[in-house]
Image (tube, one colour):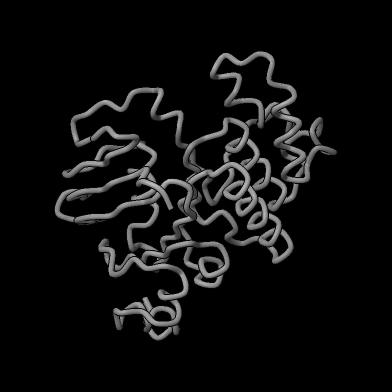
Length: 243
């Protein structure tokens, strides 16, 4: 791994008196697949929203591409555009598959993006349905369209929020292969939130466990699953912690 693309310091997000995320220190390395696991309500999705600058932290800073952003800082558009998120439920436009994938490029003023859209659809195995309306697709196909729409803008960071939840094993495998190839071929940094420890084990370089808004442990994937230093991590991996 190279230098960190994110450095979180004293980062916290609260709503009133309720702590949602509390991360004293965390580095995410450029070019890695970093998985965050934990039960529902632990703060995983909120952490992704902070990393995507969709909302500011209550306190602390996020250093991204060498610049610190705190609660009152405006993140410039050029940095926002280096990060994109694929959510658990695809929010697609009431348009064709091709138009959905092209949308991010269109917003950026790229009017000669046809080849890029075709390439992205080919990468996710959906070039043959490019002219179909998005509403005609299956759940797995919709999620692959959302992934293509994120990939086509060539982000530095791809954030994935439970991207394969409720999908069949075939589509889970397809999406995992796409993510793995994107990371290997383009060096895209991937931060994946999942409650599926098996998916984290298959994809991640490093894994973090988030419990009750706090990061319990961060470790390389083999150590995390086979020889964790923290008893709560071991219990979570073994399915002994039930929330």
